Length: 187
Image (cartoon, rainbow, N blue to C red; front, side, top):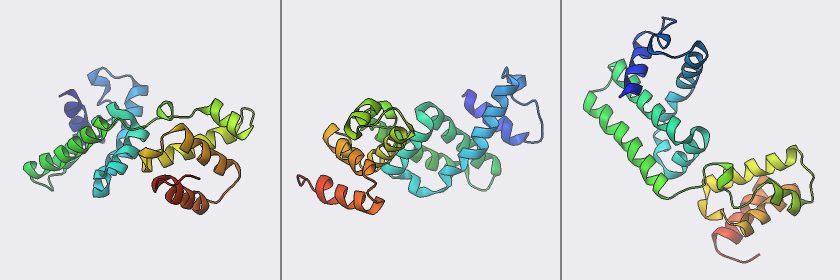
C-alpha cells in the first residue's frame, strides 16, 4: 500500500527534508502531508475515539479518504515505534477500520451539505441577511447532529437554529433537545 510506504518512510526519516519529493510530491504537498500527519495521527491514542460519536466527529473533521490515511499513518507509527507487537497493532488498527465502516453504513451527516437545513433556511428562519451568525449557527447545528444523528430533520434543526438565534444558553438548548426532541415530545 502506497500510504504505508510514504508514512513509514516519513517516520524513519523525520530529520530529512526531501522524503516525499523523492516519491513525486511537490514541496507544498510535502509540507501539507507533514503538517496533517503530525497534527492528527495521535487522535487515535484516545480509545474513546472508537465510539460511533467519536468516529463521526473524525469523519467531519477529516473526511473519509484522509481519515483512512490517518489510520494507516497511526499503524505505521505504532509499528515504527517498536513498542507494541505487530499482531497487537494490526488488531487495534483493524478495530479503527471496522468502526469507520460501521459508522459509514449509518450514512451519518458528517459535512454541512448533509444537514437537513442550509444557510438560506437559517437566514429565513432567523430573519437574517448573509452574515457570520449564519455560519456560527450552522456549525452549532452540525455539532448537535454529530452527537445525535436523529436530530437531522428540518423541523428539529429549525427549532435549534431559532434557539441559537435567540441567544439561549448552551444548557437551555441542551435541555430543550433532551426533553423535547430526543424523548419524542412535541414542543
